[in-house]
Length: 114
Length: 116
Image (tube, rainbow over all chains, first blue to last red; front, side, top):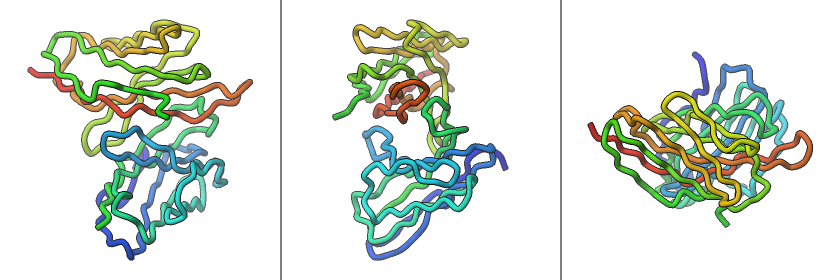
């Protein structure tokens, strides 16, 4: 596979569930990102990792917990979410995290919290 | 405070005509601007970019214009094709000093529909 792959593509969960979103990139990039896209809102940056180290947490609630075991994999662990957390969660990667690099996005994981 | 705004949620254009998508920004530190295109069920893909030292960048049917004094940029697609129907996101990054750059700030997107 090439590019950025996200699984699952769709997820429905209750507010008391614990689930995880997975992202994998085969581009040899060193930086990985989680973005949230809510309806009619701009893409919101959540987390940035560079060489497995978190370099940015954009004031994200602790019910979202990222994990980056290596430069190719990124997870977003979800627990006790709220219905307003329902959104499209996009993973992206780039060569570095300097902002000078173009992001390559995955297709997203559509999350619905009941 | 939304620093990058796309005030038109949608745009409908006839095939063969010009599509003009607009984007306004407020942060004067932004020095690099990008357009991404997103089809349903796919992630956004990079389309074209422009540095603040330029006022125009062209790539085939796509041209981006930058008006720094007005803090406005636009994406022109000519001629428009039905396959161009997608959501278009404007994004900007700030120069944080030297070779350090801030992260991309996105607009909310404009849905372009090109009718055959």
